[in-house]
Each structure stands twice: as C-alpha cells, then as structure tokens.
Length: 238
Ligand SMILES: Nc1ncnc2c1ncn2[C@@H]1O[C@H](COP(=O)(O)OP(=O)(O)OP(=O)(O)O)[C@@H](O)[C@H]1O
Image 1 (cartoon, rainbow, N blue to C red):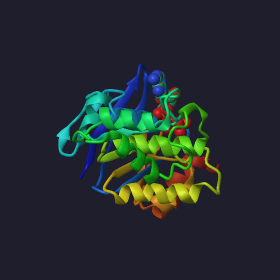
Image 2: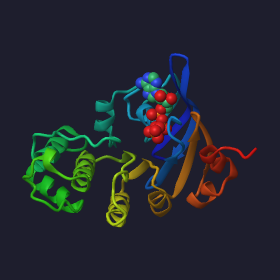
Image 3: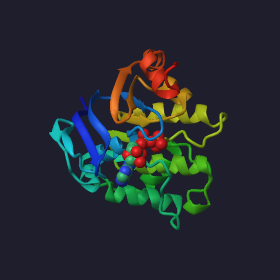
Image 4: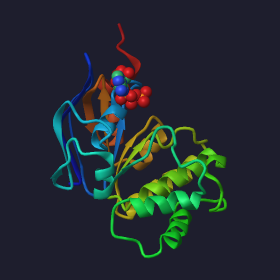
C-alpha cells in the first residue's frame, strides 16, 4: 500500500470542501479521481501533497504518517505532483528544468544530472530541442516536460491534476501510453481527470467525489454505470 487516507476533511471557513474521505492506493496502481466541478478533488490532492494541512484526518505514505508535512519534505520522500495549470521555470531551457528537478528532488544523488535529464526528456517523448526555452513550448511538449520533471524526483507516487486537459484527440493516445509507461517503471499514480477516455484506458480503479464526499469507488466501468455517479453529474430526474 503506497497511500492511505483516513477521514480527510478540509474546511475553508464555513465551507467543507473535502469531507471525511478515506481511500487507498496500492503499489503500482493508477487510481482515478473524478467528480463534478467544485467537488473538492484538487483540494483533496492539495492535502495529500502538503499544499494544505487537512482540518481533520490522517494521511499515510509508504507506511509513514505524513499528515501536515510540507510539499518540499514530501518530494524528498518520493511524492510528486503536477498542476492543473502547467507550471515550469519559464525562462529556463527544458533541459535545465529537468536538471533542477534531479538536483533538488528526492532519491540518491545523481552522478551526471545533465546526462540523466537528456535521458528523461527522451523517455517522455519530448520531441523538440532539449535547449528550447520552456515558455516557448506548446501544450503537449510542456506536459511532457512537466512529467519528465516529476519523475526526475524519483517519485514513488505521482499526483496528476487534469493532465489530459487541453490535449487534442490525436494527442491523447500517445499520452495515455506515456502515463502507462511511467506506471510500469514502478510509479503509483493518482489522477484527477475529466477526460473519460483517459480514465477508462489508464485507471485500475476510480473514486468519485461529489460535494466533498467520496460517493463511489470501483473499476472505471462500475463507477461510470453507477446511478449515484450519473446523478451527481447530471442531476436527478423529477
Ligand atoms: N483556498 C480556498 N479557499 C476557499 N475555498 C476554496 C479554496 N480552494 C477551493 N475552495 C472551494 O472548495 C470547493 C472545492 O474546490 P476544488 O477546486 O477542490 O474542486 P475540484 O473538484 O477540484 O473542481 P474542478 O474540477 O473544477 O477543478 C469549491 O467550492 C471551491 O470554491
């Protein structure tokens, strides 16, 4: 078991954005998290990755209680994340972006960070010059760079926030293959996603969050056919 959350709750003043969410992620598993807009998915991810401290509940990573630890400390322990809006060091080259992640991320010291950064960019199919400046990259290449940076930290668990958003239907299959490749290299993944093709083709299990609460969990097909889940997206018939 790489991750376990127990009753995680996050309140912002009077608003309970995440309410008593318990779930588990097995080693090597891809867990999808879906739910309507504003359901609390990103807030839940922010609690796991140390951006927020939960108001209540516990989070265990690799057997250790990590509740309330900072993102930096968690990265050193092997927990890495991507953002809904792709972030990079915009004025640096793609190569230097990855070198920075290798140097400051977790894991053992790398003997040759520049060589390793070239290898990682090749592994994620980064198709333009490794010396390209990050701010000049298109969406697909930026997403590949973001993944190269995340795995450069030698993470054991990768948290993806709407990683497939903004990709064209022709870009999606390659991206799905890449995410599976990352999992096959030994990284467990939690992926918040709205793109259902991505969910059905990559996720082993899916948890559904609605109004801050986990309302369903199961295989992608079980969950997508669950009347409660359909109702949470489409509303109830009168
Ligand atoms: N820092 C914050 N302060 C106050 N309220 C917040 C904060 N962050 C999120 N919220 C609120 O918490 C609720 C859950 O938001 P969250 O972004 O987690 O939802 P989401 O499921 O990720 O939505 P989406 O799919 O649209 O990204 C929303 O009502 C949102 O307005």
